[in-house]
Length: 146
Ligand code: HEM
Image 1 (cartoon, rainbow, N blue to C red):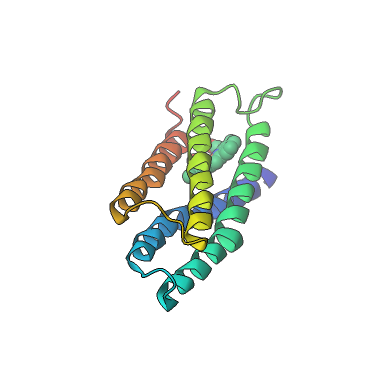
Image 2 (cartoon, protein in one colour):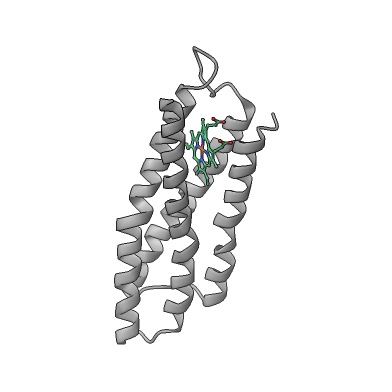
């Protein structure tokens, strides 16, 4: 029963993390079009900072902590789910998603200092990476193919 409660909150945290990871690069695309120092640009800075601090960062921590907890509670009494190939592959993809998260933090800081060096097109392409990783992670978690 505890396991199912943790899983429910794991999924809730994952949804919040992904919502932010899919929305933040859209804000970067619009931010590129705003003149430096304009009211619009300053508003985007606030939106980006708040989205990162209030949603994306805490949701990432919750998703990973609850995921590891589920991992330890898995079917094997010694290694939980960790001996399973699907979870090992999933952790690799989660590390990649966390690296993208780290890049987002750097870009929020660059925009905040008016030092963005990337184009709209760059952020449009980057926007697809969390989507692709999320699809892989969910398929591994649900189908457990190996
Ligand atoms: C280090 C991070 C993570 C670990 C260790 C982890 C581990 C786990 C474990 C052990 C389960 C339970 C599987 C079961 O009971 O069948 C689970 C469920 C799930 N995880 Fe994660 N997870 C992590 C991050 C994520 C992320 C980032 C996502 C999505 C982007 C995600 C999506 C899911 C989903 C959708 C389920 C439900 C699967 C089902 O009940 O069929 N997890 N996770």
